[in-house]
Image (tube, rainbow, N blue to C red; front, side):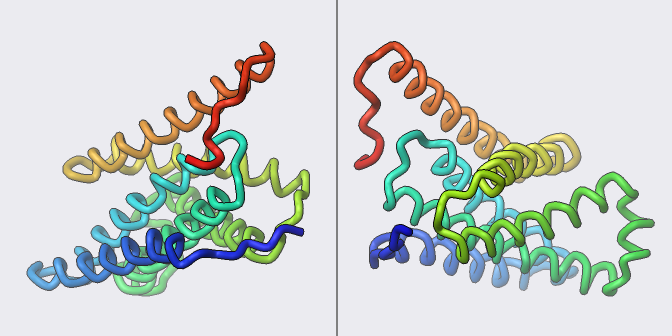
Length: 201
């Protein structure tokens, strides 16, 4: 089992953006007439913004401990910001009524949102509690890292319009770039070329 040994730099690089962005989101909503609704919107922007580096880091090849640490921290803080959004959406906006959520959003969207919440939270717990390589967790996490950005893409690009489109397209570009880098590393290894030195980047 590898010790994570989080460094101050890693914690600062992830917690500071999380803290500042979430505080800014909560304060920016103060100028709106519908305060809870704006906090619901701005907090999901923060979550998706933090998800961008987490997704990119996940798809990197030859991930060293520093990469894994940064991925885990961004992955976790993104989920915490998403939990704030979930609170304002389900508890405040929909009055803690699952029936109201289902009626207003429809089965497909509501079901997808609840699946995102439970599955992502479950994986965060797994990531913090199990450090050893386990095949089913590796498969579960890969599927989640494909499914989750797809649901965010639909919400931020297809369903809603505005600044969230920028976040949605940036997230998609980060995922594609990460996959391309990983594919290139695999191709070089397959053909006996020197691996890309991304571990210490």
